[in-house]
Length: 310
Image (tube, rainbow, N blue to C red):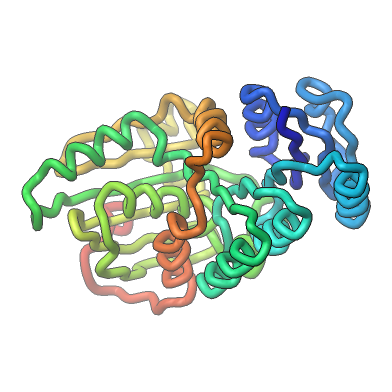
């Protein structure tokens, strides 16, 4: 039975990691979060040790290693700005990492992590779950079957309403979350690269704390994208139904539906990791470079704009 540690046990995504660890027959031996509202542990691993200070967890993992009961995997669901340090901790502790997206905030961290992989002999696995979604795989197969050089026109729209707390938390700080394009958009940008190939152009039309938009051109697609946490951006017809989230991908006018099946994809990620087929560092590079360019690049007023900007 593989032994797991979970960092960020009090976060939104942590229960999916707990369920996935249980689904693959693993044992969560310890968890850590600065917040202690983690009663969800009782539903999955009531015997897991819990710590509110990283140093306590670090000492526990070291004691287990010395007692010949090492941790096999460190699952990382902590705030984005801590991912790099927590992956380093995992590898130096003799464990492989399973890291939530974004893997890192800065592209230059990627090479340093690769060097540490080589030094320690451990591996970083990342949660790029959309690459395992059947609808996305089918879309990629369809795109790859088209004549080389053909580009489709894509509109990507994702609005996921957040309350006032969002901007007052670490998620509202660019230095900690990477900004909205990184925090809620990085997995979509990875999906676009996975489906449509190499990134050729990256233009930013809007970049604020609550919404961002721009134009991306890939080897096989021209993409207008819009991300928002503002409930007022949800189309009026959807708001009338009481909905606060709106997700749509249109490819040459065809709706790509992939709303179902999200909740089980973490299980699939863990299955792939244990089988030695996890998504590693390099699979993340293009998406990390994309969101870094969005965060740091100029905002322009020209070019192909998403319809929601009109």
